[in-house]
Image 1 (cartoon, rainbow, N blue to C red):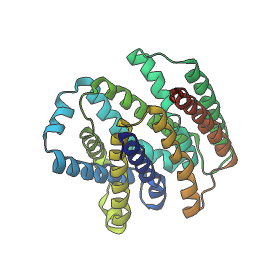
Image 2 (image 1 turned 120 degrees about the vertical axis):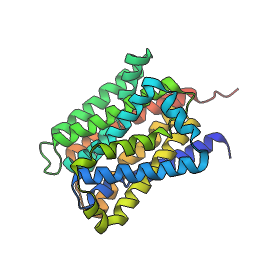
Image 3 (image 1 turned 90 degrees about the horizontal axis):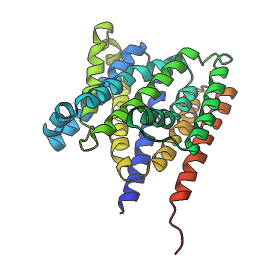
Length: 290
């Protein structure tokens, strides 16, 4: 098996494991912060056990002691996405959340320009315009759909921006694996809002959902950290778009959540802009016949 095929398989599996994330939030009957607490703690502990079992303490020390401010920024932002995601899904439609998440490459490009001095091509500028039009349509539709809300949309935008910022920060320390920093981020986030929740009651009644939720997030996080090392960013972006398509379908099939027409229209615009942009990149990189 080639490295490229391995990267495609691992990244695809990572996307498939993250698809049920929103469904778990819908199925668990608990306060949003309780869901966020167990999502962060269970996923963090599972990843931490895996890292310690496979690699020992050395990667943990490297990720925390040798990365400086970029490492701190990465861990704080990643940790903040745990409650942010749950707040987004509980306050707006799943379709809105995942369609907004699809715009992450745009924010990553903006941060790359601001903090790393990277250029933004004309293709990316046109992609940004298309994505922002789509996000505007989604925001407009939130006022006409009883499931959707601009408050949840803002949480989704925050999580998208936080992920993009974390990925930008970690590019300053490319020589150090940040996988060991992920469980520290998640567990740290859970401990921060532990004083504000009473998590044991819901866990006793719904332990299978909480553990399943954390396990899916742990596997998805690891796969989506490892897989992109072997394939291009354009291929990664295209594969991640699968979540934007599959997550609303899964939630609709299981709990009957109607995403609303404007969310679908805006989602088509966002995904279409990113799809065309990434296909252009892949076509340009295709080897020319000799």
